[in-house]
Image (tube, rainbow, N blue to C red; front, side, top):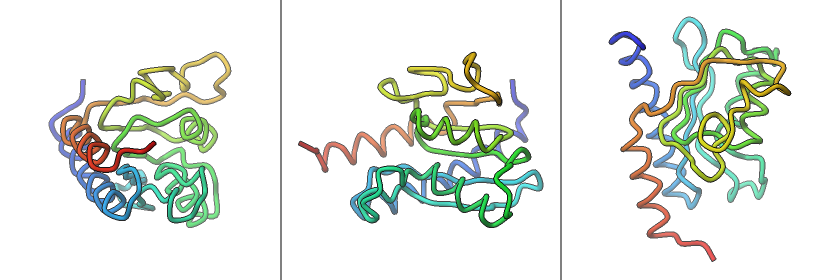
Amino acid sequence: MITQAEYRRHYHWMQKAIALAKVAGQSGEIPVGAVIVDGKNQCLAQSGNRKEKTQDPTAHAEMLVIRAASQMRQDWHLQDCTLYVTLEPCPMCAGAMIHSRLKQVVYGADDPKTGALRSMANFPDAPFSNHSFPVLGGIAAMECRQLLQNWFQHNCRP
């Protein structure tokens, strides 16, 4: 259970991630946005997906913000940081979250096909994981889900 103040903080940062997802969607990317916030509630990095723009299959929003925050700090240990993302992370991104030692991950919409934090798998609590972190899903879930559904309706892929 989270307090009202925690919910407001999570909702605030999720709205930032949603805004980034919208920009990504308008530029032809699957609309996913992510933000990393440090222990002082300061944004360290923010990004939307950039797979199409960069032709890099690892350019998920989560990967981009983990890289940017680590480079900005000159330290890959992000143990005081919370990552906010509009869609439950895939296995690749969940692995990067574990390796970067995040404090917490907050996501919007569940991903029943590839979600690796709760839906399809539970990477942070798996026996092979060398780091675990709290996961909070469902913050602004309806808005995040609707954004993705609308995008896929208008941008069907073969």
